Length: 328
Image (cartoon, rainbow, N blue to C red; front, side):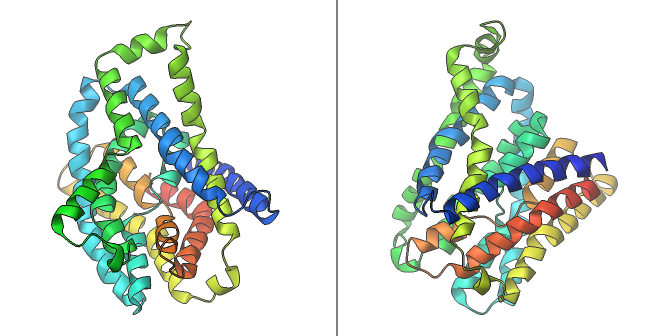
């Protein structure tokens, strides 16, 4: 019950941030283009800062040895989720574009912006492990999810070399670079020294990194609210398949996957608690926003994926606390 109330309270905080973004957009204080600016700030400054500070503060030899198991666990789970999601999306729609959007949404939740916000608030002690857990997910997104599902075929690289170079370029992003820098500083012990200076407040550069990282969650949710302000809600609520995919993403996936992991833990092999918590936090998040942002850049009608994101984010305010209370 305590976890349920704590999670519900945190979801309430995130919902208020989304509401702020929604209201600001409706009052035309912020325009639709503001989401691009905020997204760039999030991806290039605030999220990398949060990742870097976490690794500077917590990364050491023991967490390094744990990381390999966490990466393999995450990889194994996603290898199972992807084919299941492809099959289920075929049952939800016959339209090729919508089918691809549903496939992406079922394969990849909003484990980035929403997941980071929830985990950093509720489980700060495992946030570093959560970032490591999501690395295979980001890899699948860059290598297959975006180019294979979200980018229209006529705009995708035509030969293998171009596809590989495009994927590698996407993988070398500010978050990954920040992770490497933070890990090096942490594992060498330099991070502990930096944070212990100035009366335990840390030197000015670590203070800047921490403050920038603290901006990640509020701005991510405000950006989400702005995005939702420009959705045709009347059109959204008439699409039945949106609710089916949302139910799969928010309830069926976490409860089934979490239940299977509990059985495996009891009957087959011990699953470390931190692995399990990272998994539940990832799979219980709502459908992501990439299904809106990327296809719209190619002139596609994103009303269905936008509705999918809107409905799942609103309902996740209740389902995330429920799922975590049941499984954790």
